[in-house]
Length: 466
Image (cartoon, rainbow, N blue to C red; front, side):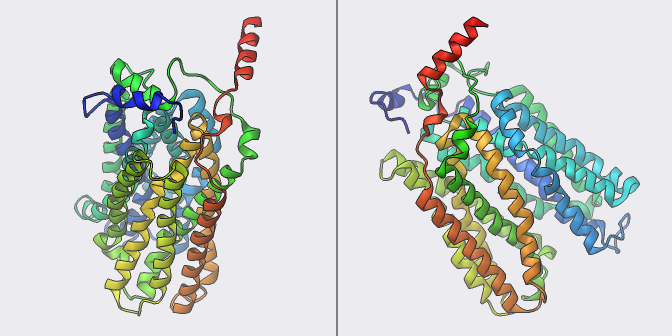
């Protein structure tokens, strides 16, 4: 938050009269970057059903174990470049990383059918690992760009709009993949994703920009408004990452714990829910694209009220930034925690109630968008990409571990009591990690976000000597 008197008052007068500016162009472009990135992240989960359907042509006789390896291979690459990506975002800017994500994933998507035909499942795994590697740039690069482009007064709703693109991409991919495979065969899923990603890449190269300072299309009025809000008036500084300060910060550890808790619950549901629907409720959720997409559509839609309410509460000064983030995160974690407990007691065959509760679990999780996900930027916008890289590394290790834990519990997938234990564990993780975040988390701007005057003058002296 901007505390200096006069600066806050001036922001209202500095705000451009035009309702749509270049920052909104960046917002739309980044929204579609998230959408296409997640489409290409989840397309294999739907495509592999058609790729192994013996009733169709050009399919493969892959065992369930082989399919599981293919589906998990994305994350092998995804966790590797998170921390380096944060440093690269700070050094080179987020735009080149986001371009690499979409362009790289698009090119690989176009190659997947050839890899499957001529290289088998091993070549498909290699493609997915490379897609995971490039998507390691996604969140650090996105956080870096949001930290430079979005005024504080608009951060909750604009960041929510951008990040919600991922859930809309997931829902749309689930909805349309079946139709594409039916009309054009399973390769069509990858060709459509690759073509759309290529179109976005061209558009972003033309209209995208790393920051207001580097944009050739932004007006001086809008640039001054953004820079004043963010306290970045003047030339951009290249700051050295304060590693010691980050790793000795309790609020940063609270942020990391919250991120890990989110990934535990989300990916347990993502990977295990189809089996639960089939074995306990006697319906295969993957057979119905609309049923699969509904929870993620709910999450997408509910993200907007969270964003607007958070910004409105901050504007009216009803709560502090830390208060707003913790309230949103509590709704996004404890709401699903209680809904999961309810889901575990749904009688077999009661599909309607199960889908309602599943939609509540995933939908309420939209609170994360205005919860922990923005705290990296609140704490240290200059190092938001680096911090996101660190927390996302540990959180995505959890993404791999949580389904394995569920597998250890589920010795008999037809036993409701074992499923109840899986849901209890996820509920407990949601509850405990959010409680830790409430107690130890903070959204106050950290002192190490900026160079101290003494350090800055020392650096300048050193530069003159050199």
